[in-house]
Every structure is written in C-alpha cells, then in structure tokens.
Image: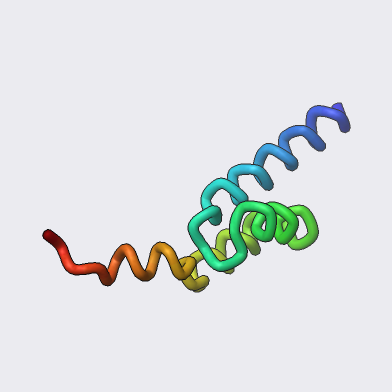
Length: 64
C-alpha cells in the first residue's frame, strides 16, 4: 500500500509539472516544488505565477 501511495503522489507531482511547463519555472521547477511543498501548494503557485517569456511574447504578438 505505501508503494501505491508514493506512485500516486509522484503522479500528482508530474501533473503539476506538466501544467507548469509554460511558466517561468518550467516542468522541472514545478515538479520539484510539488515534491517538496505538496501538489496543492504548487497549484496555488501556478495560479499566481507568471507565464514564460515565450508565452508572453506569443500572447502579445500582433495577429495576422
């Protein structure tokens, strides 16, 4: 049972990393943050976090 709980926790951390891949921290940053601070805390960080420079430039680019 503890093995299943660890796998479930790491899967939740991977989801956090995947959701944060277009932010300043990126996948690895959000994955590690979720491992150390728990996934719910990481979701809050992502909610108030800043998108990456590429995402900001893409959003501000003029439409053609």
